[in-house]
Length: 282
Picture (cartoon, rainbow, N blue to C red):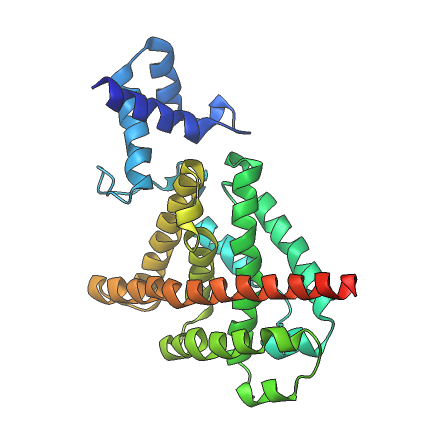
């Protein structure tokens, strides 16, 4: 019993730590804390603990406002849609122009996202550093792949690219285009579905590396975007529950090949850094 209580209290502490003050905790919970009502506190914390581990909430009806992120599911989806309101940058453009300039701009964009994305004010600097890796990957490479497959020109354009950076990335690009790109083309996602997929990549791709706080925030993003996507499917696509479940499962299954591509990219960056060090020694 005492061990269970400690877990719940620790879970609640994690949720409200960081830059958030106690006003972010629901009023009924604050009152219960002042009155020593352990049952109410334990119920609130356990709800967060169940969210972390993917267990269903006790209430069948989901709240209008996502408790941790402090916004609605529709507002969360709108945020991710706005992230894609930028000039297209397909894979071929990354290497046909200034590779270093594009990557520097992406790092700046990823830092901005990590600083302003809902829920990141709960995270410490180590959490932000981990989240940045997946954000920068999604914001540059996943977006570039999405833009590439919507061009009329196919992968044959890759053979026309000739620069120093390309020789390190050519295998990665080919695998990325063939494996993840083919799945994206097969699913024929619209922009709403892609926005949700991008949120999955940012918040779910590296879940094994996440701290408890990061996992809680990530799960809230997942629940919020899937809730908004479900409503979108119902109202805009007239899909039934079974069709919706299958479609969301298809999106989630894309994380496996995307994660493999991410790991391959990490190796490429390691080779690139090693090459730079060798050139400096010469």
